[in-house]
Amino acid sequence: MTIKSEREIKLMKEAGHINYLAHKEMEKFIKPGVTTFELDKKIHDFIVSHDAYPSCLGYEGFPASACICINDEVVHGIPSKTRKLKNGDIVKLDFTVRKAGYESDMTRTYLVGEVDARVKEMVVDTEKALYEGIKQVRPGARIGDVSYAIMSYAHSHGLSVVEELVGHGIGTNMHEEPDVPNYGEKNTGLVLKEGMVLAIEPMLNLGKRNVVMLDNDWTVVTEDGSPSAHFEHTVAVTRDGYEILTGE
Image (cartoon, rainbow, N blue to C red):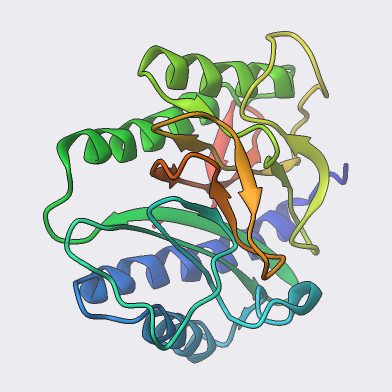
């Protein structure tokens, strides 16, 4: 895993700020009747208008600027001109922003209109699980400490953890070493050092943890059709702890 310099982390923070702003902008458009294609175009145009690039576009052949997932779709949903948001849906916007050669990765789950109380609670708890993991980040901690914190919070709130999909290192490439699972044991895995940057991203299900791939070879859904929530931040290991790079 690469150690980033202060200059590199500053560049990643610039990319992360654009990512954050794009998510804030999208809040205006999350409503029934909007297509996932329209959301993707707005994300693309916003990122490009800030002299950055939506690096999901073309990544290993992915055909859009954002992965957009609804309800039981866990990751890598392909935007569609015919797929419209409906009242009661949850929608996940996951996209990367590259600026000056450096990446940022951020995901949020949004509520569409009036959402079932248990599903809404799952969304809230998934975001809280993300921050439980982030709080473990500091020099000398281990990846397993982050993983265990996420898993423990999820299980204590009745949610299952997707094990086939994990967080990752990030830098000049969207995906770098190491893997950052959302399940694991304390005091195991890579020791964190100042200058490492991680994309931490719990994907939690209301039903069972099992997932399957759709025939498009991209979209992963829950096997039992249960709703799934996903949150992600790009986080740097600092001298005293951590800094969230996909923030204000």
